[in-house]
Amino acid sequence: MKKATKTQWIFFSIVTALYIAFTIWDGNYWLLLGIFVIFDIYISKFIPWGAWKNPKNKSLRKIAEWADAILFALVAVYFINLFIFQMYKIPTPSLEKSLLVGDYLMVNKMSYGPRIPNTPLSFPLVQHTFPVINTKSYIEWPRWEYKRLKGQGRVKRNDIVVFNYPAGDTVASKSPSNEDYYYSLRRYGRERVYSDKQLFGDIVYRPVDRRENYVKRCIGMPGDSLQIINNEIYIDGKHLPLPKKAQFNYFVETQGNILTDKQFRTLDVSMDDRNLINRYQNSNYFLEQIGIEKNAEGSFNPVYSLPLTKEALNALEKNGWARSIQIEPDDISGGDIYPYSNFFRWSRDNYGPVWIPQKGVSIELNEINIALYSRCITAYEGNSLQIKDNQVLINGNPTSRYTFKYDYYFMMGDNRHSSQDSRSWGFVPEDHIVGKPILIWLSTDKDRKLFSGGIRWKRIFKLPGRD
Image (tube, rainbow, N blue to C red):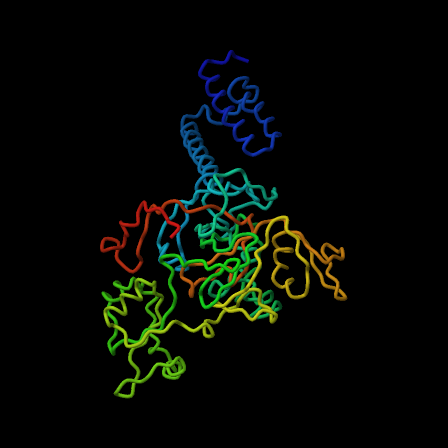
């Protein structure tokens, strides 16, 4: 062993200090054995770790230098993406107008503490599937249990949160219209979903950290009793104010004219949301059913279904563009409402009351609340659950109570009538929480050309608020 230089000792000291700090943060002190490897890399050099980077052939040496730089960059990106920051793009309008389709977010994983990955062997910046070649971007083994490192705080009410989609554990690879797998089961039946490969493709399971990323606002906290009455939220009986930019769907009957692009932009309604009802077949019957009256000529004025904020609604009324405005009735919203049981006659606008599970709290099990909490007990907390001869069996043992091991959250979109959220698929367990958006670093408007308003300059470097 050659005598180590001063530079070698400096690098060894810096890397070792960082490694020890990470070990303390992680809490797994077996990792300290890695210091012997670091010592050999920088000081003793018994194992020729860098021999592959110094081939005799000059061309191969150049390739090795590039490979070394790329490998270092990938490792650095992997750890930054895993423990500190992650980039995320808003794909759907469920949080409009707080966050817009086309917003690119920087998500801080330190906000709630980064998770140790369930699947540590994965390609950085690819969630679960390589594009084009359509293969998994991760290796199933090894599989690690849930563990979250210490962060800057915990999820708070009204936080905008990025999390792994709870119902994304099982996926039909060719699911029609990106339908939820469990929705497909309820709609088509298990036999068809598994047998019709042409329509549904293969059925695949994804670990928690490889499920799709969603972003919603946290409305309900662990231990809360939540209820929605006519679109108003109540927590433990107390009214929760709406977010400033919350919006609902309205039927807007015009004075007889088609609304212009300028008018829509005044109302901040995107092209995808400009839904003219009159263009549909049997629209006259539908308009009669919702109470729209015919004009003096015996026909119907143009009627739109539009998502509007309170500000847009006031502008619409003030400008006199509408003959009538009515909020979209609850009974025509369609879609499944969690927990999909006849015991619960809940709807999109009138939901609950429902108790949100809290870590360490026990509940008495019965045939009614099992519909609410069975997925928490089985899919999220890894137990088996059966009801046999009116007796509840958990992991084969008869019981009448269950104690939750995770905290759960109730998430909703600010676009209240156009959001698939906890009303659709239930609670979000703590091990699914990814982080908190802290910065919009780019925002694009697909309704406009790149150099004609296609970039929303006013939103760049904006901090997603809690309003």
